[in-house]
Length: 198
Image (cartoon, rainbow, N blue to C red; front, top):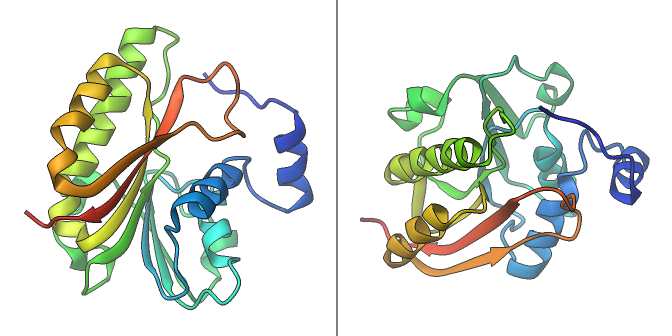
């Protein structure tokens, strides 16, 4: 169940040629927590259609590399950028860095992944948290020591408990509901700074 709300951020996304309004969520997060640096090596999980990647690549003086992974077909329009590599695959299939064509861990892992929603609150919350848990399971493979993670989750007590259990994995964990989030949405973002490699 998905739909577009044609509000200020929808129109602003069109004006700025962003593929989705979610670019403004990452922009707000980045401005507040300084996630993306000029030379960052970035992994975008569940990138499709690619507005977060657009934001990163369009940052002034960005000279790093971005890898995008999604189960959707590769967005060929994005794929032409020389600082970007896209893969059609599940995060579950990433067992080593070579699976996504890199030989060093990432400075930043960002995930705007969301499950296909059913409209049943508890089911959607559990599906969202399952994606988050999968990302955390893969972090030792993907994220370098001292690296940062930005990840979306649907609000629930189970999600709160999960992140409390993960607090020792990072120097600091912050929570943010960006201004561009639709009012009816139950999502928020978790910004994890300074990964402590286990």
